[in-house]
Image 1: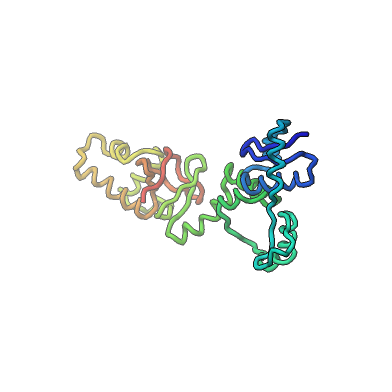
Image 2 (image 1 turned 90 degrees about the vertical axis):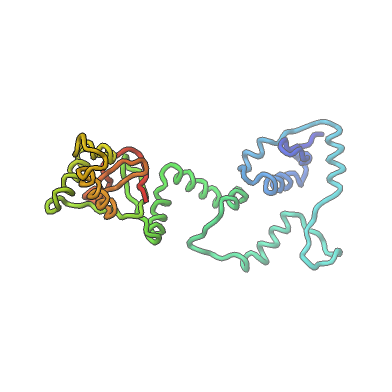
Amino acid sequence: MCVGRCSLSGELLGPPNYHGYNERVLELHRTRFPEMSLEEYRRHIEIVRDPEMIERWRRECRVQKVFRLKGAGKETRGMRWSEAEVYFLRHYADKLLREVRRAIVPPAVIARMPETELKRLVRQAWKRESRTPLTMALALRPAFRHMGLYAFKANRGETFVTPVRPHPLRTEHVVVHLKEVLRFLREHPGCTRQQLVEGLRPGAAPESSEVAAVLSPLRWLIEKGHVVEFFNGTLALPAMNGGRSGRSERGRPRG
């Protein structure tokens, strides 16, 4: 004779040919290791032929867990887990369950879910979003917009969020100071403020009016969304076609 034993918990499951063996496996998996698939959990079951283990299982199986309806007397026949589950589904499930088109479920609840088709679909969606979170990005855009935030793409298609809506500015009819800043940024995407100043006013003192004539238009352009400033100080122009901003070093917009 032999008995199955869970190598993770040390609990005895009984002989594989015992009528309650599979029910015991399912119950232990459901209550103790729901984060595993059932197939994975079965790989942690070992068969032992130790006489002491066999005798221990015999003692344990003399005490059985049964379920009764709340308020029912002890004279009511107790149900095993499988019987109680069928009874619940038949008499109570329809009153407690409702169909919805959209539901928000915490990850902890999903981890405790049994291995069903629903959990398999959730796992597939999670893997897909982990590779390319397109659905999440589309869902976040209205929320960002409601909070006064705007999403846009830059660098290699990375998505960034800013409190100032990127708004490209055509240079045909802008004043000279704005035009020269925009032209320099178009020719030197990813430059910093210091590089911009050195490129337009080489050798100028930091507190000079020459430098102010560059930084003042730059601040206005950033406030209006005509220039995007990332958290690391790099600058970029929003794309004219509403697509990606000009190339820059990796960063997040300030704001």
